Length: 418
Image: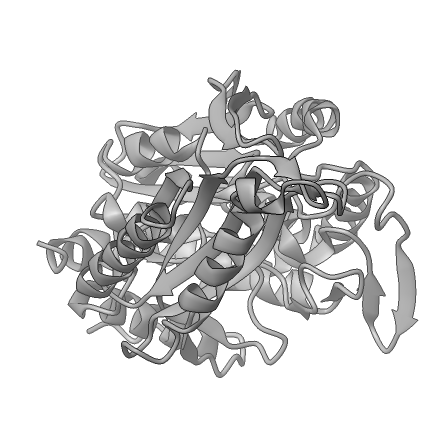
């Protein structure tokens, strides 16, 4: 195997070009973070999407902003309604090149409007702000690495499709087909720009993830005059919550977490509606099937209660992404490449999920934590480590060089998936 830890002149040059882009990568991340793009904030998503398109127009690529179809969500009344999110941004370049990759990321965050707005200097090279790590910083690093790569002599040897999604934090329900299509259009390797861990470690194997909404119906009645005539949906939901949480520890690696119960109204009314919203994680397909079967069993059990009926929405929207021969070969290549810039990279299995799960399910090995280094993501304490912009963009730049010149054999790694 070629020693990937050795720098070539092209590697040295791309690292220098990336260093020159450092301030641009940071400043545009801050600009993007000032626009709220909570997953349910369609106005914010539609405001940022064209700005991202403009930024990525610096590449030698075709850029499309594609309207997505509405996807189903269960509202607080237990009704299924459609939600139309922002556009998918699809960027493609050199489809005839011998080596093809898919790159991905997302521009939505978990923060609703007016809940987390300020960007603060925490000192010690850290900044706090919404989406700085997850993952507007990652998008900026992706762009910086590609700009530096396309300014070099190897660009014609590598083609790519980039899919930037508006709904990763809620499961990619609208954008998943775009990820699958791009992955199955000849891609050999996937590169996704979720933040790495605050230690610098990257994600290895990932569990699969499910989101469920179970809607339970009972019978309303006056709680004082005719309590016995009512059938409480909230009571049935409470029993289900206890049963769901009781599944934890019954199968290795499978976890359940109830996030919310919606329903009910005044205390003098027997509640006739309750919605149990919960998630599940599973390490492999067999475990995911077991988890789904348990949920169906508990729904049937709830509906056996007198006067209770119900229905379920959702399931395992992200399949597991276990380590296999192809993944391990790619992780080794990334780790060896990191040594060329002084990084000692490790890959840690995690229960978290991302678009890398979708790309793996489409048959493409991928590394999915190529973004900036940070921590406390999904909280108002989210922060980014500023020195990681250069560091992680240089890692991607070197990977692009190695994919283009063949030192990192994408076709060979992809073959290990079969």
